[in-house]
Image (tube, rainbow, N blue to C red; front, top):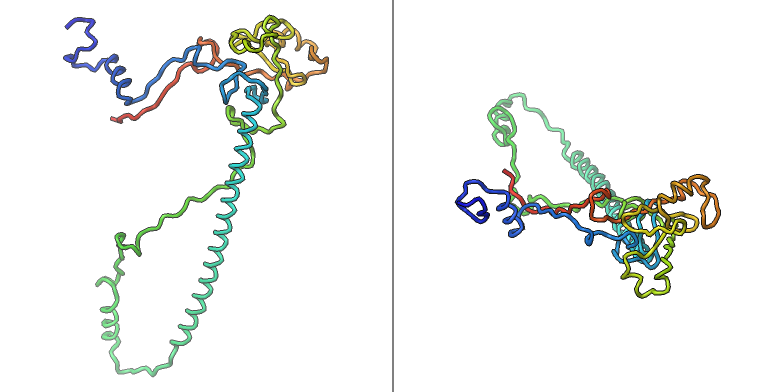
Length: 298
């Protein structure tokens, strides 16, 4: 057997190459693949539509969205919350009616039991010559008890329709009235969205048709550096301009004044923008996609 025979089947060991080939062919087990640059989102693309934003907005956590897409997502969440709230209210009304019916039936059972007890009270003369042992024996023979006096346990016949356990509907929990960010999962309101303004590079500013096809589309309005996935950037809340983090650290953080509007800035007014990956592991993003399939536990 040659040392390069990958398709050989006479080996007693199930090699890694054979396992990987069989997994990819059958879809059995977990599969993983490393993501390249083409599989990652650009820094100016919407996190929902994955397309370049026309009206970009950013959340306080730094996730970029198309304004129409995020508003539609928040509206859909509100509609779902309203629908779930109606179902929850119906369930609560049903539970209240059931509790009232149970209380009413229990009160009626008590009244009927009292009437039966009152009607069965009859004073009879006691015969002193009657044998008590025989009467107790006859009563014990009629009762469903063992010779030891212990009552026999009755097992329910589960195959009889009347004794079949009924499935109950799962209780609906009270829905949350808040809307959440699709990416971070944190509460998000419409008024929390910040309008973003990208500065187009002057060479292609007149050519709007070819803007999307260009790889270098936007620049920092202060330093003039080209923005991209490899350049950390931030959004200034008062003006919505996107600047590089180098500009923030070397220029803006010295006096905390917005270079565009001249207004005083706070730390919360500087929102770091969540950017996509570059294909290199040093960016800090997860560069590996994994798909979990069926597997046998030994």
